[in-house]
Length: 287
Ligand SMILES: [Zn+2]
Image (tube, rainbow, N blue to C red; front, side):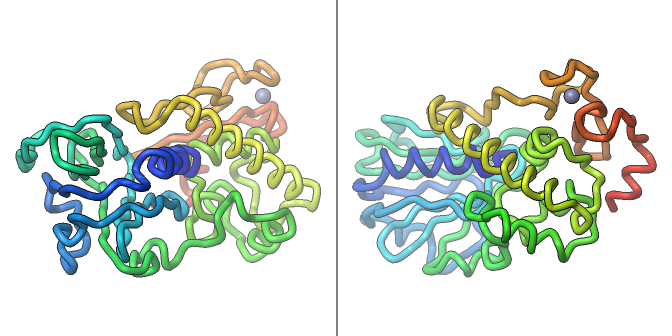
């Protein structure tokens, strides 16, 4: 699932390549992705693109007085093309949900919002104010804008597990399953530590880890031209999705906690004093 670094890289690409163009046509291949009906996407025709933004894990393009905002969900992506084919999309065929031509179709660049797999969760809104998107209205402060004192205040109110609290978009915006694994590993904090009970030293370490992990990942994602890839491609992960492999810090074996629809990873030596956490007990604790 694209998180803050990937979405920031896609917004960066749109800022550098889409701003200044005029929207020629918007093709909707999967009507179900559109969560707003008024105004219709045709009102974007002939509107100039003036900006691109990120709110947590939401990506938006500003055109005229409107914002076209997407939540890429688990398997969605934005794919840039220097020259898009002019033929209208065939509804319900393939991974493309929505296509934006930035100029005369067939002669201009543009982008597709795509979604792999059969679970269709990609969502798009067309609004005159970003806070009209329900998920944006309730976002906590952006992860990259939070300083150490604010992080301490945010965590103090939460008796849940730190893994759960860090990925709660209403508390802090932008961090998901992958980067929370990385941040907690870098800070040497157990995913099951109680958020409100972290020591001052732990909160400082967590804040430092949060900044370095996310900033490095944004730079990597921008550097590999995220929007020209077919989907999310991550490198440099230390524990996330590395179950059974050696921890790059201490060489202990990276362990996994799995749930019905996701799993996450940690290093016992670096994070839990060497203790291997049992799956079943922990899935109950995380509820
Ligand atoms: Zn380790």
